[in-house]
Length: 395
Ligand code: PLP
Image 1: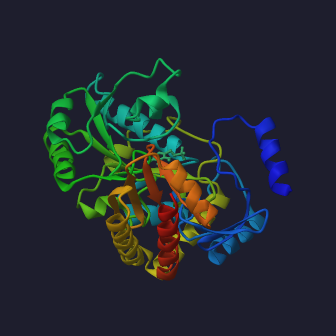
Image 2: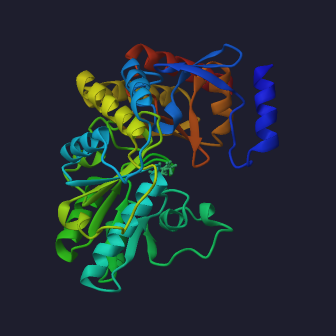
């Protein structure tokens, strides 16, 4: 009853921009969620790579409740303790010196683009171009849409801000040809998420590093989806040994409280001076306290290493299923950012899984994406694989 009423209210009053699954979620714990009718689901979406510690982890819940009783918001006219502490923590983790806090992934990329333009402009007034990759996704603001390498997201919203060009992902020749004296930065997701879980190869990442060395172009890595433990390292760039000049983060950064950030090395960060950029909510005490609690818990549990082992179990299980179900044509990914490329439309499989108690996501039309909480247990991985096996068999 409650479900029906909620769906009716949504359909009457909310912009119809989301293709929602027909479930009303009311509660979560770890890797499980429950709908308004009391049905339990294994959640292999995690709010789209947001709830890394699972739902309602006690350490995060406690930190949020405590901070909510102390001070929720102040604006950036004042200093706050959790914001300063989190900045130091992120600087240590990323190896980059300074952090700017914002509220979402799009905003983090928007800020990184502004920073790259300002820095580029210091050496040459025309140095504002950003090279991006086909299949990328960087957000829904105008600049991040212009950066996104999928034309369908831009349709009807033109004209786009100028200065963005795209090259095929993992194509070193095209990449080299696209970088010239006007290029301020190259913006790349080391593992593309929305584009279908495409992992950068080491030649491509080495080429990025070489281009930086030769031309002084900045490297911006969008680790909004693939960062913070998701691939089995704190950051995906660690797999390649190429540290970016700017990294963008969001999604899991505050364990479900909305927050984004971009971090940069000192010389680059200095391009933004007093009054150049700002936000009312960015880095507020509630979000930063949640983030500090999450990072401490990730460290305590040694989560990135655990992700490598559960990720391997998931990938091997999917490969085994691919051997028995011809509908799966490829399994790919890194850590717990894994996907099955299907021979056809992925929507019926998403439905078949949900009907059997497993939530998964379909992206790029025919790619089933698995983004379980980083704390998912081996038993939960096995259960998900069992449900997927049944769902594949039923189609
Ligand atoms: N960058 C990447 C890699 C993403 O996956 C997303 C969201 O899916 C974004 C940017 C945009 O983040 P947000 O939806 O928080 O604006």
